[in-house]
Length: 392
Image (cartoon, one colour):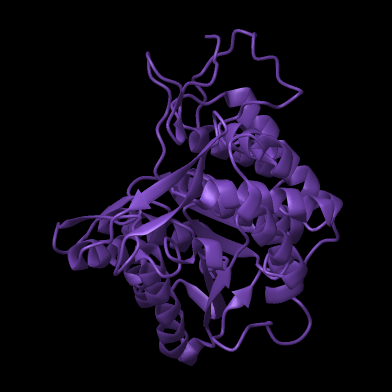
C-alpha cells in the first residue's frame, strides 16, 4: 500500500508505519543523548501511545531503564484502513525497548472500563509486582462511566458569555474570527466527567486496593493553563473546569496515599501540537506564534524534551519536587516568560491571513501535525509500497 496523508479537519485518517517508527526513533535518540536519570523503575502509563503519554514512556524507559506497561485504545490495520498512529508508535517503541533489554508490554482497550483496570492490575502482579510511577495521560472526547454506564461527551466552549477571537485554518493559512457560544451547565459537567480527575482517582484507588502501588509511588496527570489570549476558551472555559477538578484530585490522592508515602502531581505543560490541541479554536494560531518566538529564543520544546526535563529537573532531582503555590509542577515556565508572552501578544494583534506565514511558524505547526501520523520525515520514502499490518 502507498500511504499518503488523508486529512479531515483536525485529524488525519491515515498513518504511516515507517514514519511513526522514525518519529519514535527521533524521540528515543533525544532521550539517549541526554544524561541518564535516577528515576522510576516500574512504570504504568495510562494513555501511552501518543503525545505526552508516549513521551513519558520513552523518557522513563530510555533514560531511567524502566520497565513500562502502557494502556491505550488504538486500532490495528484493516483491509481498507491503516492502523492508527498510536498503534504504530507503540509497535516501534516496544521493538526498541526490547532490543535494549527493557520490559515493555501494552494493553489495548477502553482505559475507562473496569475490565482494562483489572487486566492491568493482573499484569502488574504477574510481571512487575508493583509500580513506582503511574502516569495518567488520557485524551478522549468521550467517556462511559464503568459503574453507571452513562456516556459523557466533552465540549470545547467558553463559560458565561459568547467568545470571539482570531483562529487559523492551519492547512490553508486562512485567519478568521471564530464565535463560540457559551456552554450549558450540562456541557460543563459532562466535560468535567470526561477530562477531570474522576477516572484518574478510580485508577489509583483500584491499584492501591490491589496492593500494586510501591512505597513512595508518584502519580502524574497533565494539564495546561496558557496565556490571556486563550483563557476564555481554555482555562476559563469548560476544559479549565475539568483541569480544576484534575488539580483538586491530585491533592486528594496525595492525602489518600499518605500511608505509603505516595504523591500525586499535576504537571502544567507547554503548548504543543497534538490531536487534542488542534481541535481547540484559537489555540493553533497561538501555538504557531509561540513556536516562532520560542525557537528564536532557543527555548522551544516538544513533548519529549519536556518529559525528559520533567523527570530530570523536577520529579527525580536531588531535593524536593519543585512546585508552585498550588502544588503544581510548572513545565510551562519557558512559555510563560514575560519576554516570550510580550512578543506573542504583539504578534497576535498584527497577524492576519496575508502575513500569518511571515509572523508565525505555521509551517512548523503543519510539520509537527503531520509527524503525529508519521508523515513529513525526511528519512522515509512515502512513494514506497509498505505493509500497513504491524503487530504488537
